[in-house]
Each structure stands twice: as C-alpha cells, then as structure tokens.
Length: 134
Image 1 (spheres, one colour):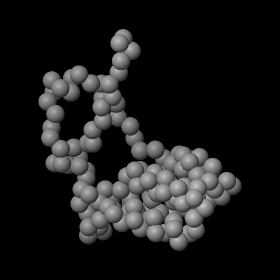
Image 2 (cartoon, rainbow, N blue to C red):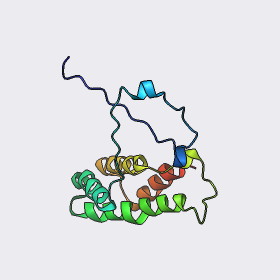
Image 3 (cartoon, helix red, strand yellow):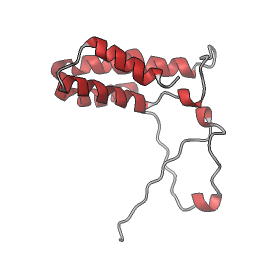
C-alpha cells in the first residue's frame, strides 16, 4: 500500500537503560528516521490526566490530576533520579514512567465507574502500582 508506515520505538541506551539492550547495526537503523521526543511539561500532564478523569470526577478532576501529577508522580520520579541521594532500590525495574501514572488513572476510574471509589482505594492503588516497581 503506498501509504503504509511502520513506527518503531526503542528505549535509549543511556541513563536507566544503559547496557540493558543490544546496539542496533547502522544498516538496520538506516531504514528508519529517528525522531526524539522530550518529556512533556508537568502542566501538560495535568491537562491530560484532568481530561481522562473528567468523566468520572467532574469538577474535581483537576484537583485529583494536580495531586496525582505534581504532588506524587513528579516528586517520586525526582527522588529516584536524584544522583546526590541515591535511591537504595535503584535498578532498571524501578524506573518510574508515565505508564505508572496512566495505569493509576485507569484503576481509579474503574473504581469510580463501579461506584466503589474512596480515597483509601486511591492510596491502595498508588501503593500497588508504584510499589510494584520495587
């Protein structure tokens, strides 16, 4: 098909992933056009999470989104990446990414949809999702 496109993704071979993947040959890489994306600013993540929570939390969606992103997710990421006070459980499996935040949103929306949500569930889900990385 003339409009066929193949998209491939790969973790960088630096930082938390250094030495965790094989180096790809230049002949293989020449078949792709590399595009690098920077991490989204915190406020954009708050906007995304607010939109995902809106259906279930209404006017409180932005309050929960700010708490989730700015009061928990970002501080945990910074704590893990802090080179001065090295986190004792730091291994490749302890990488915290946006995947954990999105999984957390999915779980609390599920609770809310079932009519079983309370803040204790939110705390438990947070512990389950983020704690599972260690």
